[in-house]
Length: 115
Image (cartoon, rainbow, N blue to C red; front, side):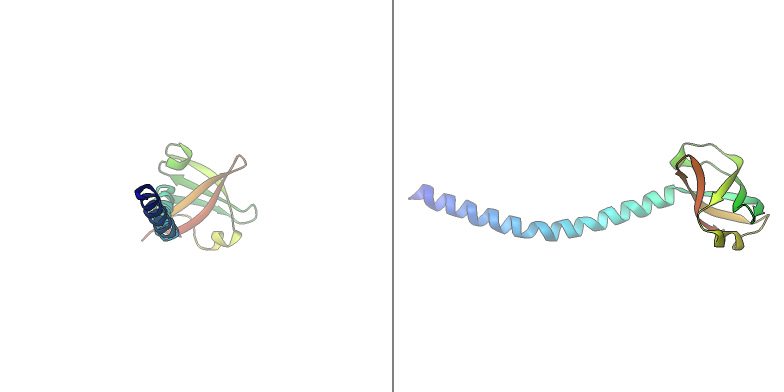
């Protein structure tokens, strides 16, 4: 009888723990969101716009290290994800931007004039 009672208690406890799992998983989502925000900040680099080439949809940027791409500081030409980005900056602007490797092409996916 004691074994049945212990088994029943274990089953009730297991059910109670399992009922709490979705709540804990939802709460854990905050940690994932925080990590994504941290990764996004790590992917952001500082730079200076050297040239805006609207016809070709490209920016020439003198930039610091691009940690997410394992690339050191240099000046290079980037495609932009959205042509509207080209209207947000001009030569000489100090910027913060994000670059991703899109099938071998370095593409600016976000940009803002630094304050």
